[in-house]
Length: 211
Ligand code: ADP
Ligand code: ZN
Image (cartoon, rainbow, N blue to C red):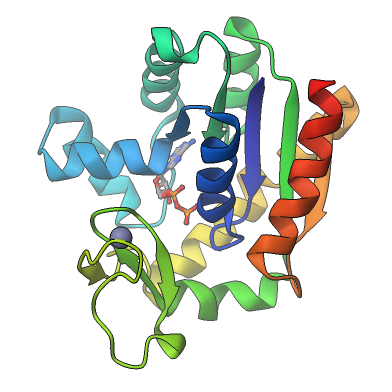
């Protein structure tokens, strides 16, 4: 199964992606994680990506598409994979279509007014990537799952978040109509539901597809 996870920043793509990858043994490919890894290792791609990410802008399509193309051509992707955060533009979707077949696009739909507060209060585990909200941490600075140190992403500040949300509206949201037209989109609402309930809906859908 080749799956795409679509959703605004803060919609909970990463959380769902981790759960799906675990349950269905699919490689979890997050372009954001790939860029952050490159930034950490100070690679050429990392240096370039950083200049865009820090401003809340998209890394150019050409660079991003090349990375994804290389990643999904690896052996571990031959029985399927899950893309988290890619595609984010129509041009990326078109490039992807040329090299692979997508079975399902899961769109996580969330009330926009929740996102600023969610993202600015987000703390992430530097070891396992688990997300927390500062309001529920009671001052804890380590990950409940693995004990790793929690940190705040540099792009989780009000100005950068605003620009990420604007970019989402202008460039990524049109993908919902794009995939709706193709007929392989599944919309799931996450607003009032806990992540586990969202995951249940996704599992129901994926299990019908596998039959
Ligand atoms: P979020 O979904 O919370 O914005 P990600 O970790 O998916 O976080 O992405 C972080 C940043 O990495 C984005 O704001 C963007 O600059 C860059 N990025 C990630 N995926 C893509 C992509 N498909 N195309 C261009 N830039 C991307
Ligand atoms: Zn952790």
